[in-house]
Length: 497
Image (cartoon, rainbow, N blue to C red; front, side, top):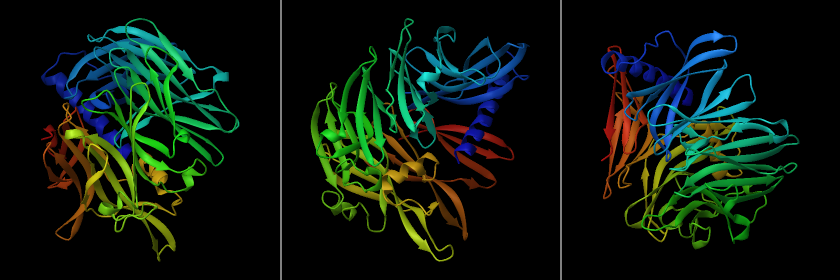
């Protein structure tokens, strides 16, 4: 699914680029250029534009000319940056900040990466080159799943600069991580590198950022012992600002989402919680927990919602989290609502034995929206029925709450993304389903809209009258809708209301 989406998006951007050049903009003719790759430009976990990176010509065996075309959030081409470099380079990731845009380049035949920072006019402002050293381990960019359509490893740090998260792979089954900061006002950078420990897998995943902090969920595993920590860095130093370890508390809370709390300088952390640290990946969670923490890492409040206690009244769940009719819940997103409320988007999944294959199969069930009050107590749960879809055959069901991350990585769930308006008052939850029309099953795209007071549902067929409809995340508070037919392609931005 992801490959199809990227291929379709690539074609659409090229189509828009050609259309804009003919009708609106006067840019250099790049009809002879060859596409290298394309992608989204992110800011604050939201799409703020896109880019097209093209090869123009080979100057000599050591030098090539390239063009980097930048589009705004409405897919209008706004600028182009041309430069020369060695052959065989590509864009690995892109992000934007207050007045700059950063592009991370990879080199096919050289062990290094380069970050180019462009100013508001599209001119090169700063450039950072980071070589790979053998003793520092093999690097790869650590992409966090912002939603089921977008992956990100380069993050903006507001007016400060950019942060890059990397995995480090060493010998003897050892994994570490590296955090890199790049300033945008002056040539200044720092690197935090987790020291390797033999036979230990230590990985970090982006959670959230504030004006001063960037936070990661750091998981460490050695054999059957598992630990997690909420780790934060300030932008002006390579020292940890704070670290909250799950092993230091009564329960081991594994952070899934972190968002700033409205009307306060505190931060809300949410995720599954477990007892103990051994074999966490092989046991079901106890329930859903919430922490309120201060900017210095002090835990202000702790709220635990057990499956068979606080959550059972609305969800009818047993102590392992199995819900009658739904199966187990996988958490997709958390959204801050009015009056301190928190909305959690989840999707059910269950297993069933099939006689034709004599094996267990996993299926998605319904989409679930959990509404928590300002004290993080479950107020209500809304279940949106949909058709079940196959997740996998012969799954590992020892812990469905962590097995779900594997399915999410490969886009197996029906949930797609959540789009939130800039003022955080409205949001739209989007997912795919099938429905029957004239005894035939066709794909449909469902949108659950919230306007701050009430919910309403929209349903878009993915194929109608020889027209294929696709929905993608766009700028905050909007959805990008493509309609492709034999007569051509139309696109429109639809506002969330």
